[in-house]
Image 1: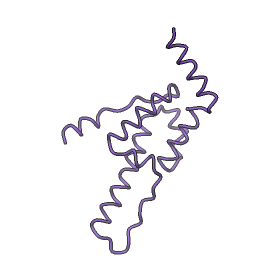
Image 2 (image 1 turned 90 degrees about the horizontal axis):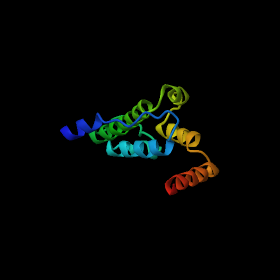
Image 3 (image 1 turned 30 degrees about the vertical axis):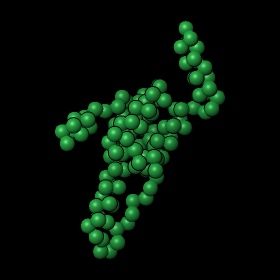
Image 4 (image 1 turned 180 degrees about the vertical axis):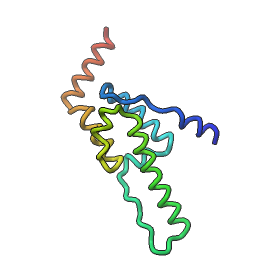
Length: 124
């Protein structure tokens, strides 16, 4: 438990709009290590509790709700104020992640140019 507590104090770098690919890999790894990636990667619905829920149903409901909230908090904490102002109105972690990906990863042509630049830098 102590290792888990100390790990959670390690946070990913704040994304300011540069080096999206590096930030995204670090963020995915960070969220996966905290067991929060599923809350972001899979846009699941939090089940509605029935009238007389069992303890197991209450537990599952609370876990899923907490994971989504924690993942959203991690994303909000890992972006600059400028980027936060663009994503703060998005409702789900999946919407936030998809927005950041589409906005900063670029299209296929841009990614191809980035790969060529990296290859050229490597060859120098």
